[in-house]
Amino acid sequence: MIEYKLGADVIDWESLVQLYYEADGVIGLGKERNLPKIKEAFHHSYKIVTAWNGNRIVGAGRMLSDGVCYGWIHDMAVLPSEQKQGIGRGIVEALLDGNEKLLVGLTSAFGAVEFYRKLGFKRHKTAHAKYPSESTYLED
Image 1 (cartoon, rainbow, N blue to C red):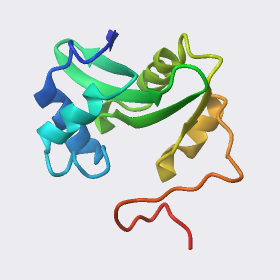
Image 2: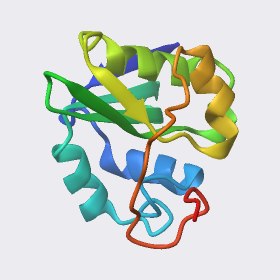
Image 3: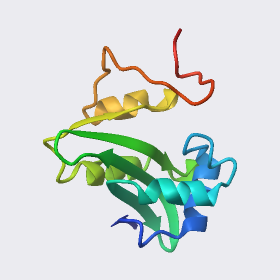
Image 4: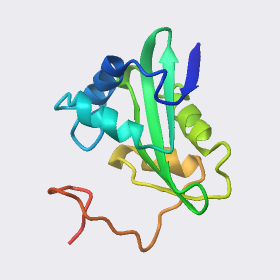
């Protein structure tokens, strides 16, 4: 049974870093196992949701927001061995809960486009991004 928890206080940080290591998340910080930067980023978040199977984090996501107009979902990840079981949907629904009046955006991994479409997200015609390094997500 998957349990969803809110906030940073409940996080087992080593388990979270392992999740992002396996899912290659947090803009490459997971592969570096950069716990201090991941922890700092999460502590600056508006809302954090972690998905637990027993005492192990199997999924996570966070929202950055002003709480009034805009929200942006970042660092959505589910362990590859736990995907296709509704965990990602549960995380997104928990992030959106109470934030229905916000314009919520996100950047999807290439393989997750259809997942977000099923949750009601649509492609934004004029979104732009500036990455700190090269990325296959950016067009010229």
